[in-house]
Image (cartoon, rainbow, N blue to C red; front, side):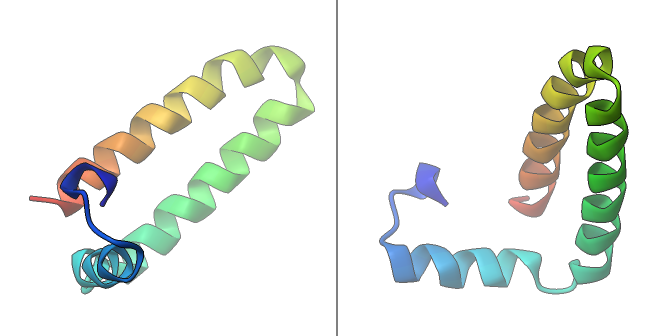
Length: 67
C-alpha cells in the first residue's frame, strides 16, 4: 500500500481488505515459497535462482490482489 501513499493504519486496513477471500491461496503460496527457500538455502547455488524469482512472484501476487 506504499504506492497509494497511505498512512500506517490505513495501509493495514487496505491490505486486510485486499486479502479478504484469498487467505487460503496466500497460505498455500507462502508454504510453497517457504519450502522452495529452504531447498535453495540447502544448496548455495539455488539461492541465486530462487531468491530473485521469489521476489518476482511476490510482486505478481501483489498485483493480482490489487486488481
